[in-house]
Length: 455
Image (tube, rainbow, N blue to C red):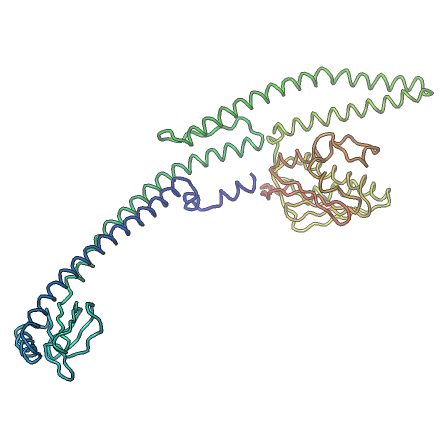
């Protein structure tokens, strides 16, 4: 399993749902609907509030005009005094201010302005609450009339309740519908992702699982992926068959040629060309077998033999095998184990990975070869010329060799074999600069040891 698949498996279901396109579209539409609803309610409230204020203002203007028409300032004061006695301060206040004189059913402070809403309190006149006030000049004084604004407050509360009790259920229902659609989309996406992961891993028989429900875009994508996988499987199967036929037809003649050259060289040792031809034939046989081996690995067939492998024990075995060869070349093979892990894989193929990397380090590197196993990560480093950055990807291709390596033994398949085996195990192969030298890192996934504890 790749790192991406592992992350998807560990992610909470709600996070996977939020990442789906239907859920994101639902949330965006819900946000747009909310903004439009708030804007609509806001505009409606503004119009209603304006109409209410204009109606109250007209009423207050009429009341002030009737009081101001009483005559001079003294007459206005008497008119306000008489009207204030007959008016309940809980609903309306009247007041006339001229110099130090203040007459009316409210004696508390008044805010400045012509038309304004204010909180008033006067225990002596039973005035307490929110009022809409209008003040006009009248005969050298200020004539104020105010109406209790509970209707305006009730209007606000009504608008707020309508907004809340219509908008919230709508948003909740939309979000619930989005979750239902997103869960379905998440299941289909997970099926497509699972099929892609298996196809990437070499299982060309993988297909997208059928999810109940009406067809949609993801259904069509899954069907297209299945058709592509089927065509790829058929092509690979035909190619494998052709390769197998070619291998079967060429294997015996190549081996027979090698045997004949060996016999000819034994009968006529004085002919040096026969010995060279025999060596070349052996190289052809080795290259031929290596190419077939890589093809088998990339086909995924060794995956059926996967079992728990102790990386620490495997590294110790390979270090013991190659330590004499390192000493003969005046080199040193150093092994370091740090919490070496078990992995699920093919022990023989993983051993081939270690062998190829150690041989490359001994053949092309310089100084000590450092083999480190830390957890499920293998690192092999040397102090030779290394591999240039531009050639670290091409060097993993089959038969590719660096210019400086063309005069040395080999067929350019060592790293290609390593790369094929690592991909078979869903791992990662990395080439880095060891400053100087080459550092090769193989990252595998931790597995579980066998119940018996035996590799």
